[in-house]
Image (cartoon, rainbow, N blue to C red; front, side, top):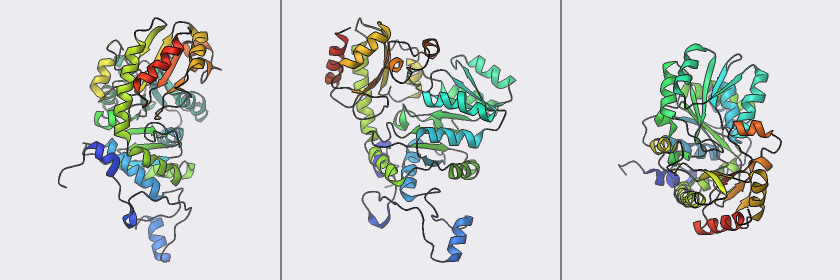
Length: 398
């Protein structure tokens, strides 16, 4: 074929497997053999390509990283280097530990994944690295900080953000960052490379919790980091990755590969169902606010339309009755699953105030948009009317 593959085909076809295997083999081995001492020395010194130890590289994991790289670089003439990790938090951790130095700061925004927020605010300070949290809607404020604070070592974005679905203007932030020679990382978990390509907008690093949409079936834990600074990724990052032991294992990687084959199809259905569910929820008197980027009254609707191909499968809504209403709603659900993750084929619903954020004071939660009545929904692939009917029954008791 002379024509490049469409992204839908890349989901299925990218990656070559040995010995004419139709399905990616699993390499459940810790160690790899050498033909002779010279080959071992050449591989270990980097003169010759090859495998040594699965904490360093594994053929199954490498094939998955290759496919995700092809998806994130789709349509771009840009080489990327990727490493598959044991979890999304493993991806966050190894990137920041390999990039940041003592005394530096991470400039970031409100409404982040809870694990990332805890990493920034509780762990990194022990290493003398601080998080500076601001509203990224105010680009003048962002530039003021970059201009006057030379300790900023990284700008970290999560867009769309969890669980309020706020968006950050990736292109605008990356333009400012390059002006002041600051690297930008983007958590692309909610959007996936099917809906959003941060590298095309100027990002330096992209990472995912592959646990979520990339796997899509709730069968594994994993993460990935991709970077366009090949030298950095193959030296400083690679060394940190190997020493931290955050590599993916081959079976989890294989499960992710199977999920990736249907990623494009799944995202189309996730988006379609989420739009229908959001429009239904917007009409209910028990609900104060619906946060879905596909609704024209969402404050970041136009921005999402500009930098995303569709609006995603995640939404949240704020029940008027607070914690009591949230618990009643959750407890009445029959079809939808009460769980805290996202991106699986079935609809997952959580009430942060009484589940994931139960030990966080209300005032602190509210600061990040996590109100007492907030319900987060990862809209699945079920028939949309069945999801809506389940919500209708749950709302009827409020």
